Image 1 (tube, helix red, strand yellow):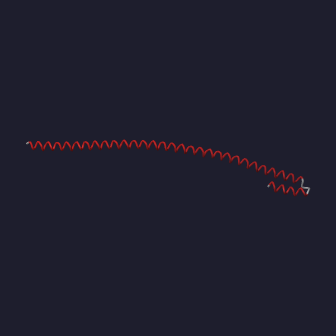
Image 2: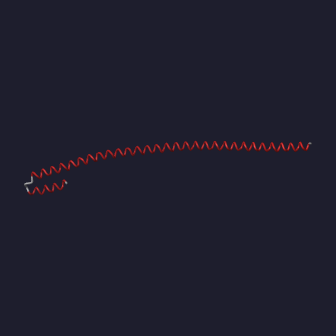
Image 3: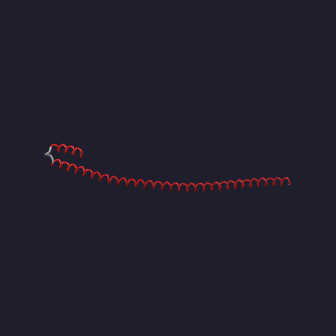
Length: 126
């Protein structure tokens, strides 16, 4: 009977040790899993913050470049309009200068020496 009690005690001790080790193993696994989950959460928060900041900076840079391009385009458009006005004025000036030269030449056409000068003036205005 004592032997059986000893065997039962040993079996109970072994079972208890096995249960304790399983409990410890489960606790350790749970602690490791919880720690890993916390690390994953911290990293995901960091990445989200980094992505948000990166996106913000990229958007600011894109907005700045867009504003510069719009400003350059407006400046170019104004310059083109001014150039068109200058071309119109130049065309008018050439037209008037030709009329003036023709008028001068027609008034002085009677003199041969001056008619040679008129053809030179016509060539210069054109």
